[in-house]
Image (cartoon, rainbow, N blue to C red; front, side):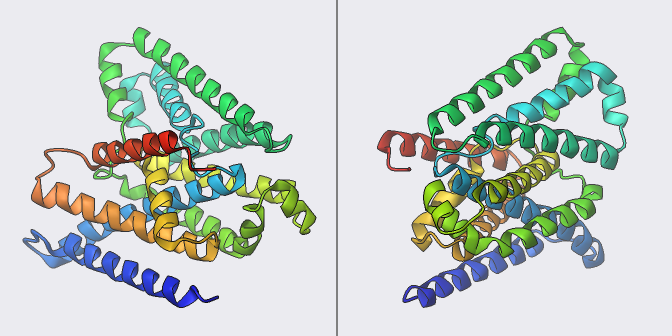
Length: 319
């Protein structure tokens, strides 16, 4: 209770930083009609905020359920599954047919396939209890290797032109989000966030561990299944929008835990979202307006996220 004013102060500061970042994104280098700029840049800004919410919330929830702050859905092979789905589409349909697919139909199909596969994978892994964490990590890594191997095999036998098209869909791209997909993405992410916010106090109990949660009256298996479905939905939406992102969620949630120094999800959830949004909006502004897109934000974010992942592994402090 004594930390609540401090947490509120930090969240207000983060909100102000995000507001400044959004203003900078909209006005730096602005030329021409504001009617056009507001729509063009505003849509891109909305996409960045939406991806920030999806990635940060999904990673935080997955770490809560798995009981380990070093795991992310991506480490469990989710990015490899996305790459395999893209490779299968190009392999079966061909590159030109793949490019000509209806964007919304392709988006919903990708989200549906990844949601089904991820829910099946996670519930199978965790359905027997999460005490055997090593088994869960091992199964996730094995599935990731299997997905990458299948995708690599198919990429070696497809047409070189199709392979070039596939390469464009294999990397995260924050600057070229399909704006036609924002409507359905907002609905999915908003629905998930409403359910998650209602579960925030239950998540605090689940973070104490499976046995403690059951002793405190929480329906652990049912809640875990609901949370895993929400995680799969959020990761599917973010991956289908911008592509696979491996370490960004880990970077954001680690910063949220470090800055807020609490286990309460009512604090960690907004903090993770604000940190993710500040990083993405500020980074995209710098790369687009200052560096003139000479490099990509996803590469930089993944570089620092990967360094943090190695640091956490070597220190062995995350449990």
